Length: 149
Image (cartoon, rainbow, N blue to C red; front, side):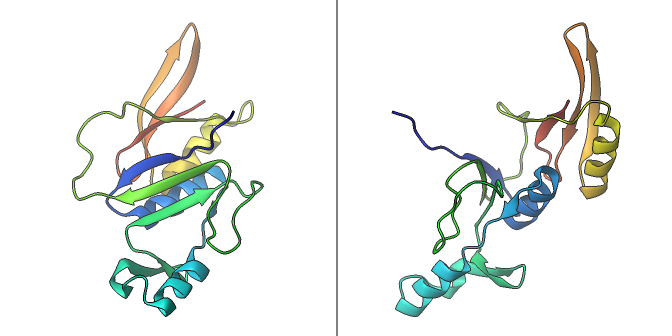
């Protein structure tokens, strides 16, 4: 048996994080507006649980991105494959991540990719050059570490 999974990342602004990571990875920001509008129409959820993002109704405290080639549910917009979910938390990040993403670039493209990511709001934390390999450690706009190889 195989299990489906997603990576869940705490965030102060889940929609800004989803936008950053969608641009970083070439993923699609999930559109949950059809489900949200239906639930609002039934009175199953309160409007205070929603916000507007990309000109459509979205969950206030959750935003997700999915690989554009992976399947997703039409009604809910939820990805059924590779997916990152950002959930709002009240506290800011204060310590090093125990889990991080590695972003792999085509050969010879790492510097250009790092420059692009910095333009999106990332910052370079350090450059690692070891006998086993080299990479750059960056942080996203909320300070989450990730590596670019």
